[in-house]
Each structure stands twice: as structure tokens, then as C-alpha cells.
Image (cartoon, rainbow, N blue to C red; front, side):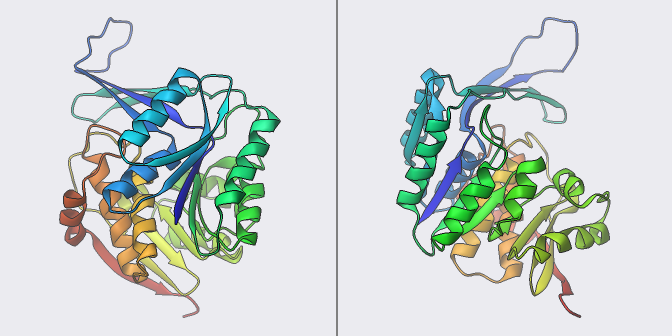
Amino acid sequence: MIVTLTPNPSVDRTITIPQIRFNEVLRTNKVRLDWGGKGFNVSRSLRVLGHDSLALGLVGGGAGIMVEDGLNKLGIQTDFVWVEEETRTNTILLEEGGEWYIKLNEPGPHVPEEAIADLFEKALSYAHEGDIWVVCGSLSQDVPVDFYARLIKLLNEKGVKVFFDANEQALKLGCMEGPFLVKPNADEAEAFVGFQIKNHEDGKRAVLPFLRMGIQYVALTIGNLGLLLATQQEMVLAVPPKVPVRNVTGAGDSLMAGLVAAISQNLPTTEIARWGVAAGTTSVMQEGISQISYADVMAMMPRVEVRLINVMGN
């Protein structure tokens, strides 16, 4: 069973305009809505890749109803804890052609302690040994920074494989509980390790502190330099081809879905990296958020350059 958990989901509103200009009235070309938050983006991408998942999270108000209905219509099973305040709406101003964008993320609703306790209880009721859980995204207001650390600890006790994606202090505390996989981007990893990641050699150094914490897979994304996927035995580099970029938002979530899909099939590390980068690269070519197709991902696979760059201990 695959479960995604999103503590701060959103309605993602993408507004396409001819050109971003300031202090002017701008006319929109297109407006689209996606049902988002990082975990829900992963669920949507997994569905396309042929893997069902259960989506858990905290939602509220009319926007929460829209998220629930939208995911259900896509064939994604949901089970939410409801709060009084409205689920956030995030807005992306996207310049036609995708080169420039402005993303406005709302903080999310205030979440009472009772709702957090209910979410933990619901999570434990679904957790079974060998399951894959993807827990990721920002934390809503009043959700404590150790939320993920507490959740990962409980899931580890159930024998669950936790795939983790967060930032700042929530990332640090969560990693201390030893998730199965962590997926930081370069900025998040730099804040974690304390040095800049400008190239692959920097990336190889940056994954080591995560591995020393007992994490089995570290998936470090370094923009157009690709994905560095490290295990306790080896490191693999997967570099995407040059493609036209239309919307980068949610690409990391599609990449995560590719990793989950590949690991669930017990593929070798090189192919896990290939699946992740193929899904993430396909996502940036689309107008929407984490909008991929199975055919496009499969077509992208052979275009991803993958090579073993280091064997741990050698």
C-alpha cells in the first residue's frame, strides 16, 4: 500500500499572462486549478504511473471540499481530518513560455492540537509493515516543527518505509528519526550541511551527512545538473536532457512519484534514478502542476543519462 500525507494542502491556481510587468493591469490568457500540496501532487503523478495511493491530510472549508472532490474524480482515495479554517489557495503567475514566474504561497489554516492528534491516530490506523508512505510539504499554522519527526518515529515503529520531503528545521528534525528516503533540493541541502552545492562533487559531499543518519536513500536534486541518488552502497547521477520548460512547480513531486514507483518495483538504483528524473523532467514541460502522462514519461526514459559515479567505501 502507498499512502501520501500532506499536512498543508492547497488549491493551486496557475494564471498565464503574456509577460510579467509591474505597476500595470495584466490580462490573463489562461487560468487553471490543480489539487495540490506536495503529497497530493505525488498521488496524482503515481496514479498516472499506474500506482494507486491513499491521500491523507488536513483540509477545511470550500477549498478543502474542492481538493477532496478533485482528487476523488481523478480516482484517488482520500481520508481527511477537517479543520474549521479554509485550506489555502496558492497562486502562480506564469509568463507564457514558462521562463519567468511568481509563486505566492499562503501560510495555510490554523490547526488545533486536536486535529493534529486525529491525523496521527488516522495515520496509525492505516500503517502496516512494508507500506510506502510519502510525507512531505510545508507545515500549516500552529503545526509544531517536530510534526514530521514524531510522525516518522511512529511510522518506523510500524515497519513503514517513509519517503520524506520537507525543509528547514522540519527537515533536520525529521531526518534525525531515520526515514527510508529523503529528497532535498540543493537549497534545502545547503541549509542542512552548511556549504554551497555548485557541482556534482559538492553534491557527493552533501549527501554524506544524511547517509550517516541511517537514511537508506538520499535523492538530492541539483536543478539542471540532475539527480544524485545515494544509498549506503553507491551513488548514481541521472542528468535530464534539455527540454522546453513551461512550469517548474511540482516537478520535484513528480520526481518523487517516479522514485516511489521504481522502488516499489524493486528496480536497481540506476533505474530508480532514471524513473525519477524522467517523471520530473516530463512535468516541467507541461502547463499545470505535476501534470505528466505515462506515455511521455516512458518516452523520456532513454533520454535520461544515468551513470554510477561512486561506490561507497572505495
